[in-house]
Length: 356
Image (cartoon, rainbow, N blue to C red; front, side, top):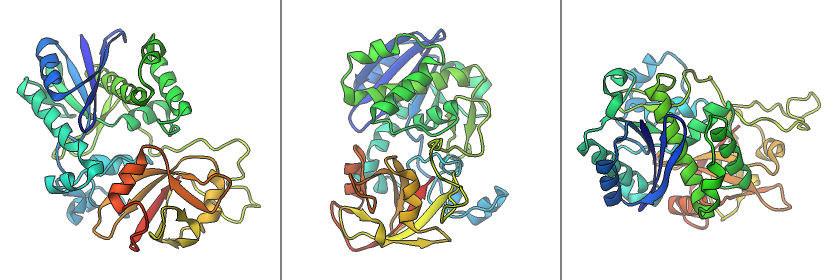
């Protein structure tokens, strides 16, 4: 049997193919036409795709539906139910828009349209989208929606380092090798550094397809919108980063008590390319931002930034070098944030949610 993972980008697809013994048969970048030929020529059992299957159907904006979830929900509007189920646990995917107009108007979301094209190709080749209802009937020629960051997180039981760092890459390789894969480092050794995290995402997508096929995975979300598959049979209520052993978090002498797996919200006026903490106005009981972030010095800071039109973006921020009073966007997220609000201050107010 062969299992495939597809990591979707705007113009390229990173493809991984494995067998049931966790041998890596293929790691290759393809375009959409090459994908068509590959699927036509290769008897794939199940495919994991790192992209939303369809647009947001608005369930999380429906108060009647939200009440049916039987829990108090603060925020989480303009998300699919699957995205809500992950984000409430500390795992933050991109929020899928409700229209193609929004997808096409936001450069940082435009890759989603490529994902829709991937699913259409797979459907044309006879693959069907799996969920918790039709799994047993359709799994021999199926496809699933995956989110690699969530897959790695639930396997490790905690949030990992940024995948664009050497530490983050090694953490992900260790997780994959810990599942029985061999030779992964050898495969990646000859691959351009900028593609390594993409192929690791594709590999974990393929592994998730294997786990779903064997009945040892699970789904989150509502079948109406499409569910996200995960490579474990049970997921925890929360995922967090492991605190540094010398951290003073939660000690009595601290001026504030910081809780992990909590979202702290701030109203921030975007007035500079640097996010100065003095401009962070706490809301909903959040502590002073400077005091809060003293506990995460030299660590990645995952945030959700929401605009006045309820559009949002998830990015990673880092502390400024030799300073503790400002944040800047890290690595690959620079273009995403620039597309969202420009390269310098636009004078508008945003809600920034810091995720611990």
